[in-house]
Amino acid sequence: MAGKQILFDEQARHALERGVNTLADAVKITLGPKGRNVVLEKKYGSPTITNDGVTIAKEIEVKDPFENMGAQLAKEVATKTNDIAGDGTTTATLLAQAMVREGLKNVAAGANPMVLKKGIEKAVAVVVKEIKKVSKPVDKKESISQVAAISAGDEEIGKLIAEAMEKVGKDGVISVEESKTMGTNLEVVEGMQFDKGYVSPYMVTDSERMEAVLDEPYILITDKKINLIKDLLPILEKVMQRGKPLLMIAEDVEGEALATLVVNRLRGTLNIVAVKAPGFGDRREAMISDIAIVTGGQVISEKVGATLENTTLEMLGQARQIKVTKDETTIVDGKGSKEEIKNRINQIKVQIGDTTSDYDREKLQERLAKLSGGVAVIQVGAATETEMKEKKFRIEDALSATRAAVEEGVVPGGGVTLLQIAPALDKIKESGDVATGISIVRKALTEPIKQIAQNAGVEGSIVVEKVSSLPAGQGYNALTGEYVDMAKAGIIDPAKVTRGALQNAASIAAMVLTTE
Image (cartoon, rainbow, N blue to C red; front, side, top):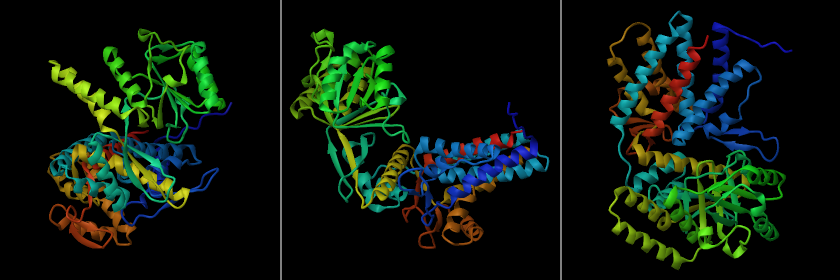
């Protein structure tokens, strides 16, 4: 039996630190407008070229098991930040690296890690409060376009995203697809999104991004629980003869039916994704008939005398594309008749006027927005597949960043906000190791701007010195090498991204420091 390896104290913490450094060093060169790209080798297919922190982080595995643990912790910082705000992954990794480095020096010098952790948490709480104070709301089309352009590093993309948000609303559904042509363009189509994902992760078509994409599928909509495969066989055979994928929306799919579908999906005989119907009770009924109207299908329900065994292809809905993630399903360009959708919208409007309950009204308005909003589709085109994939990644990132900006506002970018908030930490009255913990965070706050400057080929500490003495909101524009008013120069970050990056970095750093 292979024995377990165990490391203690210094050795353990330094192994973790080496892992964090390996990952952070690979990621941090991508920070800022003059950040470099990283090439990732793929076991098959052409290599990926990217400057997206989280994409790089996900690829990194280190041979030494202890160092690998450190790298995986740093990876968690990146993925967590990406999940919250869709951007800021590089900044988060960099902050974590700085806090771990400073913290371990102090632990080695005899500081108590638990007390340091208290100091770090105190400092982070103050910085988060300050970020809130500095942030400005984003509501105009110009400012939305600015945020998107910075995240994607491309003004055209910024304009596209702002336009998409204008057309379908800030909470509207925006889908990013690969285009068959060279250009990147925007169209608004009939469609909707609801908050239910696949019933089994084995149904995904893209395992890297954990999503299922069905092109030109049939859509079976029923209010029944499906647990016997024999109910489904007749319609499955009809769909298979047509060679098209199938999306099943049912109250639930379980037991033998689910097992059979998954096995066939894995063997490749059936391209099928099953999704639970959204909502509850009467509202579920209304929502699935909305879906039926958008896709031009019928709800297979015993209430209207329709059973699964007698279902024909004409009763199924259709759409141009359907995307299913673990949490939501997006129907793009449903084939329902415009007339019927219009009638349904008017019907809901009448109900909104008639209802006396605020809760019902809110739910009806949600349904109305889903039906009338449509889906904005950004079609990404490029000369080569590698370039198109890279561009698609960038647009999706920019989309998340823009949504985050609309939610919590924006702050001056380029690492300026964190640097200029740092002096606020000097006002906290603490002593001993708590004060040391606070100073660890204070030091880390200078790292992002330092790295942005270094990537642009300038001495980082000189820039930090200079920007610290400038009025609030002014900083270093790494692209032009000038000191400017960041907001006026259009260099802004979503407040949610800056906040999330710091909170996640501090949480992982505290974990590494308190490891024995």
